[in-house]
Image (cartoon, rainbow, N blue to C red; front, side, top):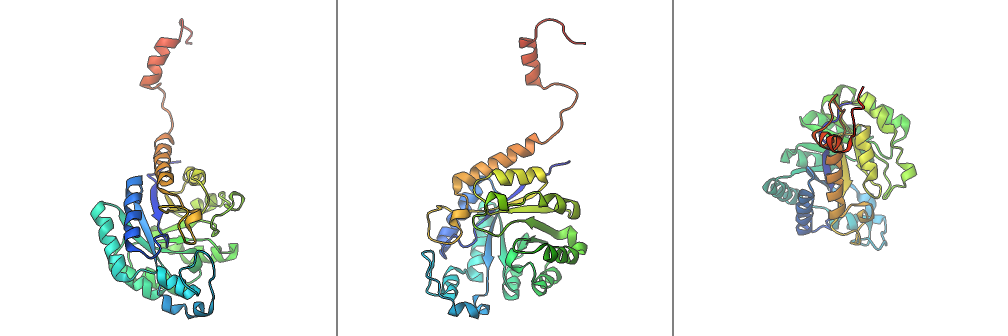
Length: 282
């Protein structure tokens, strides 16, 4: 099996608390950690009118209703432009998930390297068709929340779009228990698709390393400046030191996943000359 460079994505989500300066600090830390991309989210909140009657009394809430909560956390397209420019300034890629066609239009206008379809929308074929028809770069799709039948329907839909689709294995729980990660499903995706990724909602970094060994070329992990901050996703996110360790260990894995040739290494030769006694070679 040939292992390619692992593309590492820091998923900012809404862990910025609706504050663009916090978002920029997150971008900077993701860059310093050694990751390749920062990813945000874009929703047209006014399309979710049903959320206006949904009270949201959680300690993580930024509003009385779920609508108010999400409205508070949402960045405008002008703010996304600012974040993309900041990413370009410090030398890291920018991307975003999109949750509706209006948001897709806005993010397409920024011309990012890729656009993400989140698990909640992997059955929204109108949205996916709009993106594939109006955007000529890579589309990333997570397959969480979907039954096996729904996943197979999705796989059939993107069969003729494999050359610009990255399909992500994930379980949409925050955080997900290790026994519910079902990582061996990645083997089936590797057989079906050219590009496969893993979107991590688990604690720690071990599962992401295993997913790379199984063949995932893209690893996305939720990121936060501080896991004790107010908000929904912090508990399933890596802090700066955790992301640094993930990037370090994935790059070490990338270097180590090779075959040994016929000869010993230079270091082994030095130790062989020092430690071997007598002529015992056949």
